Image (tube, rainbow, N blue to C red; front, side, top):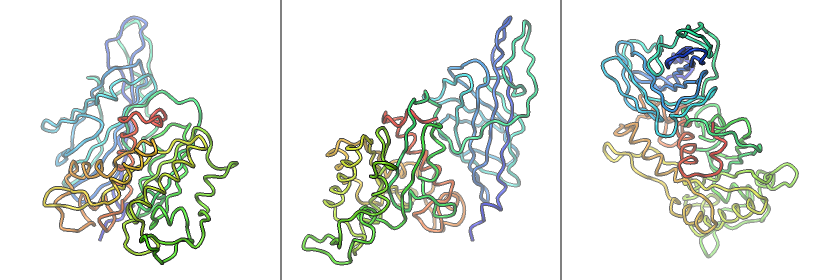
Length: 404
């Protein structure tokens, strides 16, 4: 039986850091705060997020160190280079999050192991200086950090370093299936974990619904169980679903500058109606949604279906259809596409989720997935959302300007 998340020893610690440079007369003494959060824990393993907030002068590179407790180890990290020598951990910035301005933060995450206990670190050093201070101070002599126990803002999930704040508020509309939908318990879609990656100028409106193909999402209740001569499910009416109608509403729906993120292709492969969608129809309906969004000044983004965890020995392998069709529709409609299918398979291999014995209730697989090979626990949903945030930045999709 899977251990309830509420029963886990989930913990967080905030450590204030002072002075990580050489102070001169009347110069600001750098300072920082560190937030270390255990995001999930299972027998023998755990996942953690770490955020360092710069409270002093801007830096162009950083190194964060701490000491592991007896029995703890680190197996994998993201958004930072992390090495372990004995019990000493050294985390250095990635190529994209080394510059941290005053008041800005850089975040990274890792998976680790533990034996008898899994305590949070008692202290950190930032760029070589023990974390003992608060906000920057001025002094004509050597820096004298001021103790601080005040809270810092914890991150929801590991993200790249903040970018410049975008000027105009926008809404990110989302359409998809259960792997994207909002939920508080398993299955938890990655769309429910998406908002924390953005600054306050972004509102996420997640309209993903479990069990839907692109056609049943668009034409809820009007897709019959009968196929036509072309092998497609027939429609009893071409009236759109209330969720798509709401997006198209001129008063309360899409506004110029908004974004529409679309991910389908998991349920569409069903051989039976009403969920069945053929490849040509799938691409046609993606085009319908893209065209409607563009006509209202909205920027669509296509996402290939996220992979389930399927192992071939010790290697996770792809298992979804409609990946090529999503890419083809993106090209045909001039829409950016994020290949979440490929990125998710790569993540599963990085996390070494294979091989497994099809037991999705324990270990790293149990922390990531529900009691199946498809849907996510909160931790897994956070990691999938992180893949999307990273792709926005790497592919220079304009929505990346709103990332923290």
